[in-house]
Image 1: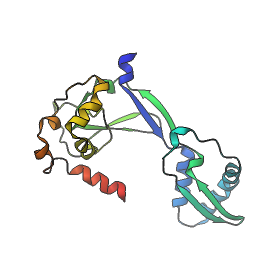
Image 2 (image 1 turned 135 degrees about the vertical axis):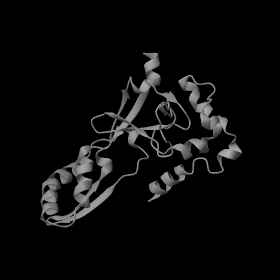
Image 3 (image 1 turned 180 degrees about the vertical axis):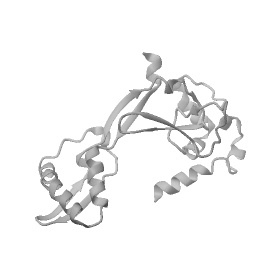
Length: 195
């Protein structure tokens, strides 16, 4: 079991209720949106009167604040009322993937808790290429964040995984060379997140 704990992944899912409310909010003003709001209104008003107690894991998360005009007055909703689902998952097949600070794959999850291993945008995977993930940040296009940690920072964070010295491609490149264009794709990720 100890070995499996190192391969345990934290998963966070947005509530389907929040997703539905955001979809209704994104609808153009029409009869369908009005009908959806009429259906949601009593539920949202009751939730606002006696909100569930938030757990301490949702502190610091940005809340989505939404308001609508309805025939019975202004209706407001905060996504803090329904925190995301949190849990841990063990994916035995993913446990076979080796670490690289410049991984060939990223990991995403769907709402059925299935794991999707996707090709990183900066890698051309050919037959025989080893499929790797980063144990530090397994999301797509995380390379700039991994580079920003620096070799020593990454290696310090890899110690709990039993990796005392990483010999991946990124760790072998001198710091000066790395800052000259190696990993510019990650800055595109930051730009998308700012938008």
